[in-house]
Length: 176
Ligand SMILES: Cc1cc2nc3c(=O)[nH]c(=O)nc-3n(C[C@H](O)[C@H](O)[C@H](O)COP(=O)(O)O)c2cc1C
Image: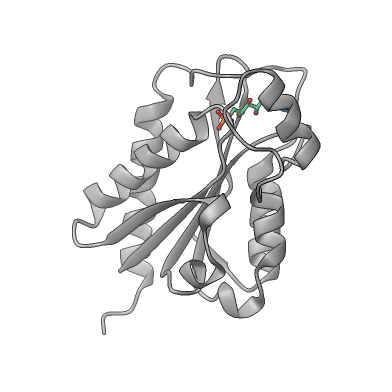
């Protein structure tokens, strides 16, 4: 079983949450081939070959990042190149033939009553419009501050979420 996690991360938090999700998937499905790819280098072919495609991105300005918000993150100390492909652009480049299987989406964002919106919801809308079958509702992992770190226990919650995806994938996949 092949699982591909495609991840955008400016400050590294979404990356570390995505790694924990990958660990959880391996806990639940030890023989699964699980890879975590940075969105800047992920090819649409990788998505097309996956039994489960998980996308992970930070919430910027109530949705997915844009070159301008990535530039703002860089000015705040993030180690990314804003012009490089972000999740919005990558999802925009996918065709229906790239997304035939199961999908899931997660974002990271601030734990603040003043901010709303979710990159995960936007990503899931796009994946479903391309024909993906959702394995779970879009999920958010909460951060203490713009640059992180995640709130206590979010890392272990991410691992459990990954394991839950693995279990659902196994029950949803017919035995060949
Ligand atoms: C330009 C910019 C806009 C942001 N907008 C939001 C927002 O609308 N809502 C929110 O909860 N967090 C917002 N954040 C905080 C990000 O969600 C947070 O920096 C991100 O989850 C960190 O993930 P990363 O370490 O993977 O980059 C914003 C951050 C930046 C840099």
